[in-house]
Amino acid sequence: MYGTASTVQAFVLVEWSGPWGSDALRDARLPAAVAAHLRRAGARGVRPLLVRRHGRSDPGRSDPGRMAVFAAYADPHQPWLESAVLDGPEQLCDLDLGALASGASVGLALTDEPVFLACTHGRHDRCCAERGRPLAAALARSHPAESWEVSHIGGDRFAGNLLVLPDGLYYGRLSPGDATALVGRHLAGHLDLAHLRGRSGYGFAVQAAEWFLRMQLGVTGRHSVRLTARAVRGQQTEALFVVEEQAWRVVVASRQSPAQLLTCGSARPDAAPLFELVDIEPAATAAQ
Image (tube, rainbow, N blue to C red; front, side, top):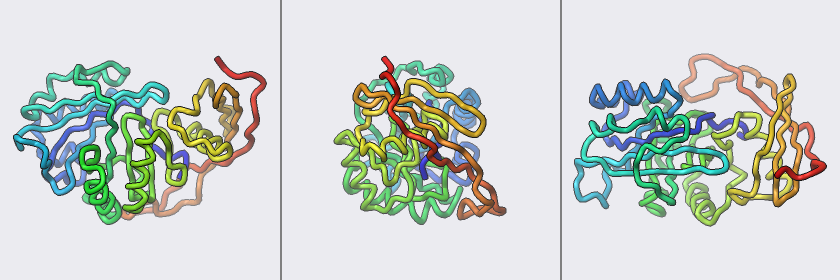
């Protein structure tokens, strides 16, 4: 699964507990002005996602008419998350979501608490409902304040999928027990390498390179591996990382898989990118 996380850094999460339809922004019956505002943000590089509590209600919310919104920037080294509770969806139009695409604050309250987003968007792909809803139910029991259901995040073939923000970590093929353990590990400062698809702030090849390096060194700390440089030469990508002041050079090669049905809803076979490790070696000097 490594090297398959969606490549995006800016996210806006909008609480919307009604039905999402096949295409969330088109079909979820959002007010027209709000949907248009989110679509414009999407065209500028922000990923709009709809979220809801498992069971469609938030027992901690005193006013059910209010709605949560999150803005996240998944910088690989300095990710951040802001949140607020709005009086209604129209207030979303007051947020400068275009600025979020370049990493600027939208003016909400900064929070240190991550959010864990289980994809349950069954109208988009039935795999997400069949495998994602048990994840969402398990996390609602174990970590109700931090967990949400989320609309389509990509990689339906890896359901059950989980996105962790603000880090931009994508995980796949999780069972309910896996998901509960993963959240505990993340809150303790560690990644779950067995289910890691990648870090969305990196391109696919660099995601794979980080995974190979972490696996070889047995490094799971969230902030223990830092990218300092990358270079692409044909079908190969060279990435330089620093781990505990030691620089490492990782080279991966990309190719296409044989055509196959990639999701539960696939109508025709498609190829998918695959990455193979070419070399890992210590670099001469650690990058500063």
